[in-house]
Image (cartoon, rainbow, N blue to C red):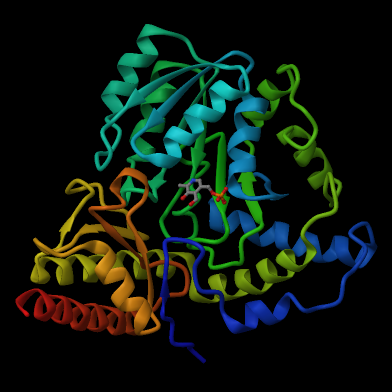
Length: 364
Ligand SMILES: Cc1ncc(COP(=O)(O)O)c(C=O)c1O
Protein backbone atom coordinates (compact mmCIF):
# COMPACT_ATOMS: atom_id res chain seq x y z
CA UNK A 1 0.00 0.00 0.00
CA UNK A 2 1.39 3.42 -0.87
CA UNK A 3 1.44 5.98 1.90
CA UNK A 4 0.74 9.62 1.05
CA UNK A 5 3.90 11.65 1.67
CA UNK A 6 3.87 15.29 2.75
CA UNK A 7 7.53 15.45 3.77
CA UNK A 8 9.86 16.74 1.06
CA UNK A 9 13.02 17.79 2.88
CA UNK A 10 16.27 17.11 1.04
CA UNK A 11 17.04 14.86 4.01
CA UNK A 12 16.02 13.34 6.21
CA UNK A 13 13.27 11.95 4.00
CA UNK A 14 10.03 10.05 4.57
CA UNK A 15 10.51 6.53 5.96
CA UNK A 16 7.88 3.92 5.07
CA UNK A 17 5.75 2.49 7.87
CA UNK A 18 6.98 -1.09 7.26
CA UNK A 19 10.58 0.15 7.54
CA UNK A 20 9.87 2.02 10.77
CA UNK A 21 8.16 -1.09 12.15
CA UNK A 22 11.20 -3.21 11.28
CA UNK A 23 13.21 -1.24 13.82
CA UNK A 24 11.09 -2.54 16.69
CA UNK A 25 12.40 -6.11 16.33
CA UNK A 26 14.20 -7.49 19.40
CA UNK A 27 17.95 -6.98 19.81
CA UNK A 28 20.41 -9.74 18.95
CA UNK A 29 24.03 -10.10 19.92
CA UNK A 30 25.97 -8.62 17.04
CA UNK A 31 28.49 -11.47 17.25
CA UNK A 32 25.85 -14.19 17.32
CA UNK A 33 25.46 -16.69 14.48
CA UNK A 34 21.89 -15.57 13.58
CA UNK A 35 23.01 -11.96 13.42
CA UNK A 36 25.95 -12.86 11.18
CA UNK A 37 23.53 -14.63 8.86
CA UNK A 38 21.28 -11.56 8.83
CA UNK A 39 24.26 -9.30 8.10
CA UNK A 40 25.40 -11.56 5.27
CA UNK A 41 22.03 -11.12 3.57
CA UNK A 42 22.50 -7.32 3.75
CA UNK A 43 26.02 -7.62 2.37
CA UNK A 44 24.79 -9.66 -0.56
CA UNK A 45 22.18 -7.08 -1.59
CA UNK A 46 23.88 -3.74 -0.91
CA UNK A 47 26.42 -4.00 -3.78
CA UNK A 48 23.48 -4.02 -6.24
CA UNK A 49 22.69 -0.46 -5.17
CA UNK A 50 26.32 0.69 -5.32
CA UNK A 51 27.02 -1.20 -8.57
CA UNK A 52 30.14 -2.84 -7.28
CA UNK A 53 31.50 -6.35 -7.12
CA UNK A 54 33.37 -5.28 -3.98
CA UNK A 55 32.30 -4.80 -0.38
CA UNK A 56 29.85 -2.26 0.95
CA UNK A 57 30.50 -1.49 4.62
CA UNK A 58 28.30 0.09 7.28
CA UNK A 59 29.54 2.72 9.73
CA UNK A 60 27.44 3.69 12.71
CA UNK A 61 27.56 7.45 12.56
CA UNK A 62 26.40 10.04 10.09
CA UNK A 63 27.89 10.50 6.62
CA UNK A 64 30.38 13.10 7.82
CA UNK A 65 32.13 10.37 9.83
CA UNK A 66 32.96 8.57 6.58
CA UNK A 67 33.95 11.81 4.80
CA UNK A 68 36.50 12.35 7.58
CA UNK A 69 37.52 8.69 7.73
CA UNK A 70 38.09 8.55 3.97
CA UNK A 71 40.66 11.35 3.94
CA UNK A 72 42.32 10.03 7.10
CA UNK A 73 42.54 6.49 5.69
CA UNK A 74 43.29 7.15 2.04
CA UNK A 75 45.71 10.09 1.99
CA UNK A 76 49.10 10.17 3.67
CA UNK A 77 49.81 13.75 2.75
CA UNK A 78 48.01 15.64 0.00
CA UNK A 79 44.38 15.95 -1.10
CA UNK A 80 42.65 17.89 -3.84
CA UNK A 81 39.12 18.89 -2.84
CA UNK A 82 36.70 19.78 -5.63
CA UNK A 83 34.20 22.26 -4.24
CA UNK A 84 30.97 23.84 -5.47
CA UNK A 85 28.75 24.10 -2.39
CA UNK A 86 28.50 23.68 1.36
CA UNK A 87 29.21 19.95 1.67
CA UNK A 88 32.20 19.90 -0.65
CA UNK A 89 33.54 22.92 1.28
CA UNK A 90 33.00 20.90 4.45
CA UNK A 91 35.20 18.14 3.01
CA UNK A 92 37.91 20.71 2.30
CA UNK A 93 37.74 21.99 5.92
CA UNK A 94 37.82 18.42 7.26
CA UNK A 95 40.87 17.62 5.13
CA UNK A 96 42.76 20.60 6.54
CA UNK A 97 41.59 19.91 10.09
CA UNK A 98 43.09 16.40 10.07
CA UNK A 99 46.46 17.80 9.04
CA UNK A 100 46.56 16.92 5.34
CA UNK A 101 47.86 19.35 2.78
CA UNK A 102 44.68 20.41 0.96
CA UNK A 103 44.19 22.35 -2.27
CA UNK A 104 40.81 23.16 -3.77
CA UNK A 105 39.44 23.46 -7.28
CA UNK A 106 36.48 25.78 -6.71
CA UNK A 107 33.44 26.19 -8.91
CA UNK A 108 30.91 28.86 -7.96
CA UNK A 109 27.80 27.71 -6.04
CA UNK A 110 25.20 26.57 -8.57
CA UNK A 111 27.79 25.41 -11.14
CA UNK A 112 29.16 21.92 -11.68
CA UNK A 113 32.89 21.26 -11.37
CA UNK A 114 34.57 21.42 -14.78
CA UNK A 115 36.62 18.24 -15.39
CA UNK A 116 39.15 20.25 -17.41
CA UNK A 117 39.94 22.43 -14.37
CA UNK A 118 40.55 19.21 -12.45
CA UNK A 119 42.91 18.09 -15.20
CA UNK A 120 44.84 21.36 -14.96
CA UNK A 121 45.16 21.06 -11.17
CA UNK A 122 46.41 17.48 -11.43
CA UNK A 123 49.08 18.58 -13.91
CA UNK A 124 50.33 21.19 -11.42
CA UNK A 125 50.75 18.88 -8.42
CA UNK A 126 50.59 15.24 -7.39
CA UNK A 127 47.87 14.25 -4.89
CA UNK A 128 47.18 11.12 -2.87
CA UNK A 129 43.43 11.56 -3.26
CA UNK A 130 40.75 13.75 -4.81
CA UNK A 131 37.41 14.36 -3.10
CA UNK A 132 34.22 15.23 -4.95
CA UNK A 133 30.59 15.52 -3.92
CA UNK A 134 28.31 13.94 -6.50
CA UNK A 135 25.15 15.76 -5.51
CA UNK A 136 25.53 19.13 -3.76
CA UNK A 137 22.41 19.15 -1.62
CA UNK A 138 22.98 22.82 -0.77
CA UNK A 139 22.60 23.99 -4.37
CA UNK A 140 20.87 21.11 -6.18
CA UNK A 141 23.85 20.57 -8.50
CA UNK A 142 24.94 17.14 -9.74
CA UNK A 143 28.60 16.90 -10.72
CA UNK A 144 29.59 14.82 -13.77
CA UNK A 145 31.26 12.12 -11.70
CA UNK A 146 32.01 9.71 -14.55
CA UNK A 147 33.80 12.46 -16.52
CA UNK A 148 35.66 13.78 -13.49
CA UNK A 149 36.76 10.26 -12.51
CA UNK A 150 37.97 9.57 -16.05
CA UNK A 151 40.12 12.72 -16.03
CA UNK A 152 41.56 11.86 -12.61
CA UNK A 153 42.47 8.37 -13.84
CA UNK A 154 44.01 9.76 -17.04
CA UNK A 155 46.13 12.32 -15.23
CA UNK A 156 47.15 10.66 -11.98
CA UNK A 157 46.94 7.70 -9.65
CA UNK A 158 45.12 9.72 -6.97
CA UNK A 159 42.35 7.83 -5.20
CA UNK A 160 38.86 9.04 -6.08
CA UNK A 161 36.70 9.68 -3.01
CA UNK A 162 33.05 10.37 -3.79
CA UNK A 163 30.31 11.70 -1.53
CA UNK A 164 27.05 10.30 -2.90
CA UNK A 165 25.18 11.14 0.28
CA UNK A 166 22.13 12.63 -1.41
CA UNK A 167 22.27 10.73 -4.71
CA UNK A 168 22.94 7.05 -3.96
CA UNK A 169 19.74 5.02 -4.48
CA UNK A 170 18.22 7.92 -6.43
CA UNK A 171 20.69 8.29 -9.29
CA UNK A 172 22.84 5.87 -11.25
CA UNK A 173 26.33 5.61 -9.78
CA UNK A 174 28.53 2.94 -11.35
CA UNK A 175 31.12 2.57 -8.60
CA UNK A 176 33.20 -0.07 -10.41
CA UNK A 177 32.76 0.99 -14.04
CA UNK A 178 33.63 4.59 -13.24
CA UNK A 179 36.68 3.55 -11.21
CA UNK A 180 35.59 5.15 -7.93
CA UNK A 181 37.69 4.17 -4.90
CA UNK A 182 35.48 5.22 -2.00
CA UNK A 183 31.81 5.91 -2.53
CA UNK A 184 30.03 6.99 0.62
CA UNK A 185 26.31 7.32 1.03
CA UNK A 186 24.01 8.72 3.65
CA UNK A 187 20.89 6.69 4.27
CA UNK A 188 18.55 9.52 5.27
CA UNK A 189 18.21 10.81 1.71
CA UNK A 190 17.30 8.76 -1.40
CA UNK A 191 17.74 5.55 0.60
CA UNK A 192 14.71 6.69 2.67
CA UNK A 193 16.00 5.39 5.98
CA UNK A 194 16.22 7.02 9.39
CA UNK A 195 19.58 8.77 9.93
CA UNK A 196 22.36 7.20 11.98
CA UNK A 197 24.38 4.93 9.71
CA UNK A 198 26.48 5.57 6.61
CA UNK A 199 27.46 3.12 3.88
CA UNK A 200 30.65 3.03 1.85
CA UNK A 201 32.77 1.10 -0.62
CA UNK A 202 36.56 0.69 -0.53
CA UNK A 203 38.28 -0.44 -3.72
CA UNK A 204 41.17 -2.92 -3.60
CA UNK A 205 43.48 -0.19 -4.86
CA UNK A 206 42.35 2.11 -2.02
CA UNK A 207 42.76 -0.67 0.54
CA UNK A 208 46.34 -1.32 -0.62
CA UNK A 209 47.14 2.38 -0.44
CA UNK A 210 45.45 2.80 2.94
CA UNK A 211 47.57 0.01 4.40
CA UNK A 212 50.60 2.31 3.94
CA UNK A 213 48.98 5.40 5.47
CA UNK A 214 50.05 6.18 9.02
CA UNK A 215 47.77 7.24 11.92
CA UNK A 216 44.47 6.04 10.54
CA UNK A 217 42.87 6.01 13.99
CA UNK A 218 40.42 3.30 14.99
CA UNK A 219 36.86 4.48 14.35
CA UNK A 220 38.17 6.32 11.29
CA UNK A 221 40.17 3.47 9.76
CA UNK A 222 38.28 2.22 6.71
CA UNK A 223 40.57 -0.82 6.49
CA UNK A 224 39.49 -1.78 9.97
CA UNK A 225 35.85 -1.76 8.84
CA UNK A 226 36.69 -3.85 5.81
CA UNK A 227 38.54 -6.58 7.68
CA UNK A 228 35.76 -6.90 10.29
CA UNK A 229 33.14 -6.84 7.53
CA UNK A 230 34.88 -9.74 5.81
CA UNK A 231 34.62 -11.72 9.05
CA UNK A 232 30.88 -10.95 9.05
CA UNK A 233 30.93 -8.23 11.66
CA UNK A 234 31.69 -4.72 12.86
CA UNK A 235 34.47 -2.83 14.61
CA UNK A 236 32.03 -1.62 17.30
CA UNK A 237 28.46 -2.35 18.35
CA UNK A 238 26.44 -1.34 15.28
CA UNK A 239 23.15 0.55 15.23
CA UNK A 240 21.18 -2.70 15.13
CA UNK A 241 17.66 -1.18 14.71
CA UNK A 242 18.95 0.80 11.74
CA UNK A 243 20.26 -2.39 10.17
CA UNK A 244 16.79 -3.91 10.56
CA UNK A 245 15.43 -0.86 8.77
CA UNK A 246 18.07 -1.18 6.05
CA UNK A 247 17.08 -4.82 5.55
CA UNK A 248 13.41 -3.90 5.06
CA UNK A 249 14.21 -0.92 2.82
CA UNK A 250 16.55 -2.97 0.61
CA UNK A 251 13.58 -5.25 -0.08
CA UNK A 252 11.50 -2.21 -1.02
CA UNK A 253 14.21 -0.86 -3.34
CA UNK A 254 15.06 -4.13 -5.03
CA UNK A 255 11.36 -4.94 -5.53
CA UNK A 256 11.05 -1.62 -7.37
CA UNK A 257 14.31 -2.31 -9.23
CA UNK A 258 17.24 0.11 -9.32
CA UNK A 259 16.70 1.14 -12.94
CA UNK A 260 13.03 1.92 -12.21
CA UNK A 261 14.01 3.80 -9.07
CA UNK A 262 16.50 5.98 -10.96
CA UNK A 263 13.94 6.60 -13.68
CA UNK A 264 11.33 7.65 -11.08
CA UNK A 265 13.76 10.19 -9.58
CA UNK A 266 14.54 11.51 -13.04
CA UNK A 267 10.84 11.85 -13.78
CA UNK A 268 10.16 13.67 -10.50
CA UNK A 269 12.88 16.18 -11.35
CA UNK A 270 11.53 16.71 -14.87
CA UNK A 271 8.02 17.24 -13.50
CA UNK A 272 9.33 19.75 -10.95
CA UNK A 273 11.20 21.58 -13.71
CA UNK A 274 8.09 21.78 -15.91
CA UNK A 275 6.02 23.09 -13.00
CA UNK A 276 8.72 25.61 -12.02
CA UNK A 277 8.91 26.98 -15.56
CA UNK A 278 5.13 27.57 -15.60
CA UNK A 279 5.23 29.37 -12.24
CA UNK A 280 8.20 31.62 -12.91
CA UNK A 281 10.44 29.76 -10.47
CA UNK A 282 13.97 29.40 -11.85
CA UNK A 283 16.55 26.79 -11.00
CA UNK A 284 19.48 27.99 -8.91
CA UNK A 285 21.55 25.14 -10.35
CA UNK A 286 22.98 25.69 -13.83
CA UNK A 287 21.17 24.26 -16.85
CA UNK A 288 22.45 20.74 -17.52
CA UNK A 289 23.62 20.30 -13.91
CA UNK A 290 20.31 19.76 -12.10
CA UNK A 291 20.24 17.12 -9.40
CA UNK A 292 17.59 14.43 -9.80
CA UNK A 293 16.94 14.25 -6.06
CA UNK A 294 16.66 17.91 -4.99
CA UNK A 295 15.49 21.00 -6.86
CA UNK A 296 16.92 24.26 -5.54
CA UNK A 297 14.74 27.08 -6.84
CA UNK A 298 14.42 30.86 -6.82
CA UNK A 299 10.79 31.82 -6.14
CA UNK A 300 8.84 34.05 -8.55
CA UNK A 301 9.97 37.71 -8.42
CA UNK A 302 8.93 39.48 -5.23
CA UNK A 303 8.17 36.29 -3.25
CA UNK A 304 10.15 35.48 -0.11
CA UNK A 305 11.15 31.78 -0.19
CA UNK A 306 10.52 31.56 3.55
CA UNK A 307 6.88 32.54 2.91
CA UNK A 308 6.55 29.41 0.75
CA UNK A 309 8.20 27.18 3.34
CA UNK A 310 6.05 28.60 6.16
CA UNK A 311 2.84 28.60 4.10
CA UNK A 312 3.35 24.91 3.33
CA UNK A 313 4.16 24.10 6.96
CA UNK A 314 0.81 25.61 7.97
CA UNK A 315 -0.81 23.10 5.58
CA UNK A 316 1.15 20.15 6.99
CA UNK A 317 3.71 19.96 4.16
CA UNK A 318 7.47 20.20 4.63
CA UNK A 319 10.04 21.38 2.08
CA UNK A 320 13.55 22.72 2.64
CA UNK A 321 14.57 26.34 2.85
CA UNK A 322 17.74 27.57 1.21
CA UNK A 323 21.08 26.42 2.63
CA UNK A 324 23.76 28.68 4.12
CA UNK A 325 24.37 31.82 2.06
CA UNK A 326 21.45 30.86 -0.18
CA UNK A 327 18.92 30.79 2.66
CA UNK A 328 17.41 34.23 1.91
CA UNK A 329 17.00 33.61 -1.82
CA UNK A 330 16.14 29.95 -2.51
CA UNK A 331 13.94 27.05 -1.39
CA UNK A 332 14.53 23.33 -1.95
CA UNK A 333 12.15 20.52 -2.82
CA UNK A 334 13.51 17.07 -1.98
CA UNK A 335 11.90 14.70 -4.49
CA UNK A 336 13.71 11.59 -3.42
CA UNK A 337 13.45 8.33 -1.53
CA UNK A 338 9.91 6.97 -1.55
CA UNK A 339 8.24 10.07 -3.03
CA UNK A 340 5.82 9.01 -5.81
CA UNK A 341 4.47 11.01 -8.76
CA UNK A 342 1.13 11.53 -6.99
CA UNK A 343 2.85 12.87 -3.84
CA UNK A 344 4.73 15.43 -5.90
CA UNK A 345 1.55 16.50 -7.71
CA UNK A 346 -0.17 17.08 -4.37
CA UNK A 347 2.78 19.14 -3.14
CA UNK A 348 2.90 21.25 -6.31
CA UNK A 349 -0.83 22.02 -6.00
CA UNK A 350 -0.23 23.09 -2.39
CA UNK A 351 2.62 25.37 -3.46
CA UNK A 352 0.33 26.88 -6.11
CA UNK A 353 -2.20 27.72 -3.41
CA UNK A 354 0.47 29.19 -1.15
CA UNK A 355 1.75 31.32 -4.04
CA UNK A 356 -1.81 32.57 -4.66
CA UNK A 357 -2.15 33.48 -0.97
CA UNK A 358 1.18 35.31 -1.00
CA UNK A 359 0.19 37.22 -4.16
CA UNK A 360 -3.17 38.15 -2.62
CA UNK A 361 -1.46 39.40 0.54
CA UNK A 362 0.97 41.53 -1.51
CA UNK A 363 -1.92 42.93 -3.61
CA UNK A 364 -3.81 43.46 -0.56
C1 LIG B 1 26.03 16.01 0.04
C2 LIG B 1 26.10 15.85 1.52
N1 LIG B 1 27.25 15.44 2.08
C3 LIG B 1 27.37 15.28 3.39
C4 LIG B 1 26.31 15.52 4.24
C5 LIG B 1 26.49 15.33 5.70
O1 LIG B 1 25.70 14.25 6.09
P1 LIG B 1 25.47 13.86 7.62
O2 LIG B 1 24.63 14.95 8.20
O3 LIG B 1 24.75 12.55 7.50
O4 LIG B 1 26.79 13.76 8.27
C6 LIG B 1 25.09 15.95 3.72
C7 LIG B 1 23.96 16.25 4.60
O5 LIG B 1 22.96 16.80 4.21
C8 LIG B 1 24.99 16.11 2.32
O6 LIG B 1 23.83 16.50 1.77
